[in-house]
Length: 191
Image (cartoon, rainbow, N blue to C red):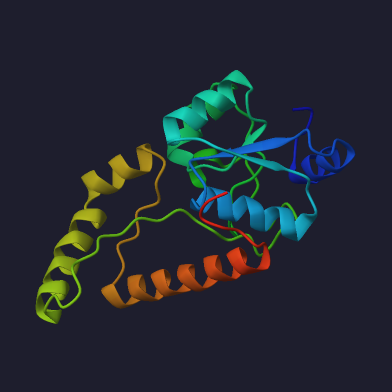
């Protein structure tokens, strides 16, 4: 791709309608939704190509079968460092420390594209609050331990360890945001 930043990507895609594609790990995946949201915010002309999982999309990008992918830093960090992939931006308001040379989407002119990757642990509905609290305390302690923090950082993650209430709010926010994106962009789980 002859582009070095998000502005050039948008301009190039508009000048080459129907010729720039983006891969994701599948229809309805967060990467699919976030890229569709990026399209709606910028007017970029990008065609979705779903793949069956992260290894497949990464190989497709390395072969040049797809022009663009939106993936976790953990998956692409070594390919970016080796010059096999070009990182245009990281979603969010701030840069990602292990790839500090890559601007955030806010810096790149798309300020409301804060869709950081996150993971969490869920318990079955009806789990007693005391059990949830104990599990949360143990898991937070593990995530914040120096060994785990270093290992997660090496893998490309930003360890947080939040309260169950904070995590619940994050999940609710994600559901609200992705529902809005689906409705505004007429996205369906199946195409």
